[in-house]
Image (tube, rainbow, N blue to C red):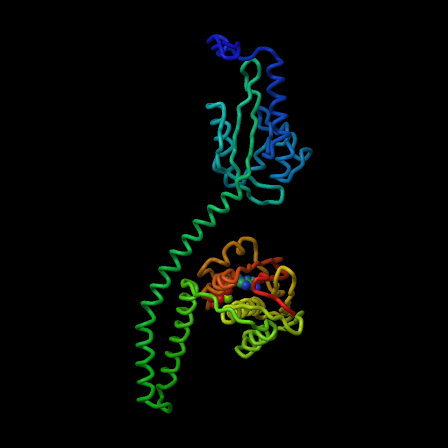
Length: 378
Ligand SMILES: Nc1ncnc2c1ncn2[C@@H]1O[C@H](COP(=O)(O)OP(=O)(O)OP(=O)(O)O)[C@@H](O)[C@H]1O
Ligand SMILES: [Mg+2]
């Protein structure tokens, strides 16, 4: 039997390495590992202060080694995690088991982002078995976490959509009945009757409910694309004219950076609804401002056509940005919160993308990217 295969005597396994070279070898191993791995590897002393910080740690968390060496590692944890006693928990668990493996948690980057990581932590002892500190390895699992969250979100949205479609369907029949009954009453009393304006008012409100039901069904149902060649410039002008006529752009200057003609192959009603909602939202964001400005731009290019709607309104904070595409999220007293979810659905049905950029307090830009498959020719 080769020496390496022979079972080691029990006593040897139970004694801790006395030879300082063993420790040196172990340190060297950690350092080599830290150099070659893409994961973040950091060493901590007994008090939790950072003593080494590899390239992976810089890439994942943003700080350079000289900015973090000597600092307690708790600045890498979000406040709420610290408040929940995570630092103490980590120390306790690493000490009692000797290590922690693939604990899913979060850390904060230099620019304030939260990243999902799998944390492995090893308790380090010196030659006499006294605690030296710990080595922590952080693996970036943000992509997987993002996909998981996306999946849960997609399932939730599908469930909401289904429930909403059923409710919309149930409401629509009695609503049609009420509308017909009012029409009969109106005819019976005649337009000169003192009660005629009340009938008008009821019908107006019924139409509003009907628009919401329409939105709900558009959001929930799948409708195949009906592509046609259309001129985007004319469509955009029609949308602006309709919004002006509806009083939605009062006091707003509309600036255009658009070529004479941009032809695409797209579903006209889906695209028109999308443009209408984006320009309408921009108009709403500008209500009451004296310097209200909407800038519309169409840029055909090799990657497709980019349509941008920019307003110099209050902007959208990072917190709000996470919610505005959720169905029924609205900050308006008369909003349904379906405009953006429907717009995104329409654009994605074309294989395109809807993006938002915003500098709170300054401006917001919504950008539709229609891919070349839709065909752009100027
Ligand atoms: N240009 C913008 N500037 C600031 N906030 C915006 C802008 N566009 C959208 N938002 C925010 O996003 C929210 C959701 O927009 P969305 O179009 O989905 O719904 P809505 O406009 O509230 O209602 P509706 O269903 O009638 O469109 C808005 O209520 C608003 O808070
Ligand atoms: Mg809207």
